[in-house]
Length: 451
Ligand code: UD1
Ligand code: CA
Image 1 (cartoon, rainbow, N blue to C red):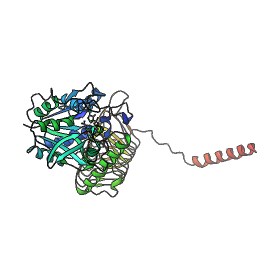
Image 2 (cartoon, rainbow, N blue to C red; image 1 turned 90 degrees about the vertical axis):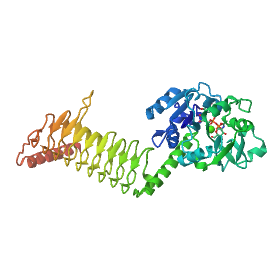
Image 3 (cartoon, rainbow, N blue to C red; image 1 turned 120 degrees about the horizontal axis):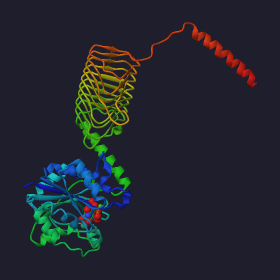
């Protein structure tokens, strides 16, 4: 008898002024509704349903790209929050446990808060999440009688005395799923907005002799996103929290305010992340690594003792083993770099494997793309790739092999071999001096002609 998550995400979000559904706009590299989904995981839900409407197919696709076990319910007309929740009933028809309603545009409800709501559910039939609003504005007001939540009154329907209440509705509600759908069946739309209000279930529950209460959380958790400005504020709030968390976890950040984290960043203790590092989605950095300034990482795994940057770019599929070195202006993509290997300057290594302790000289490029297909480059252990080597994939360089600087390598190089593939040098003694004299006298003649 677990919990089911119901995430409301059918609204249009007009104030975003966007062609895209509001809930798909990203915070810390994840659509905002994914944040609500992730927070809900603390309740170990045995089902999750996202209610989509505006741009529903795109929202469904994004949700299932993140987690394909999430069910989608379509709300074709947005008739109110109670109507939205009722759309999840079919998906949850066999669910006998609890349901908790979250909003897709309210990403910061904490795990701790959700656990407190689950705790309160042990004593009450309906549990609503409230907060004391600094500016209660147009939020629904929670009418409390001691511990008991008597009813929720929407701002539009409230009299002056009710509007004076500052304890407001966040929108998050928990109840037994069957009971929730039963209560919703009794909700009408005879109110100032002509909508089916989810908030009405409280009064209906009370009339049926059920108990209802409210759990309070900090107002920062209930921040909803309606505009680009609020999206930017939400990003800033996420980053501020992530930085505090990283410092708390034993990570050194000399300039925390310049480091950007993603929703799923994992960093081990004693790692140093220098100034202006951007961490995209899917980054894991193990303990004791060093990410130097102005590096950009996404979809990669960095092992203990590795040094990355300054100015390095690690793209998806990068796997750096222990004590590797990736230096300035180096891009790595879909490549495994074994222990102790170095790519220190100005290189591109893509679709490749570099063996242990191999050294890649400055300006080396794996030419992985033929214009149609991508090809693999394999480099063995203890190899030495000379500066400015072009490795035309598919190609294999053996263990302990070498390539000469400036080589264009399009044939395999066996273990221990040295490959040179460049035009031979011709040196003409004294020729430079003659050439300079000739050019100088030419310039004098030309300058005279111009006078
Ligand atoms: C709602 C609450 C209000 C609370 C406030 C907190 C009701 C009646 N009111 O008001 O008490 O203080 O949230 O932010 O519940 N949605 C749908 N389908 C619909 C209607 C809404 O999916 O038919 C979704 C929206 O996309 C949004 C959420 O539900 O994510 C809340 O809807 P919204 O219209 O913003 O509710 P409020 O009027 O702000
Ligand atoms: Ca709202």
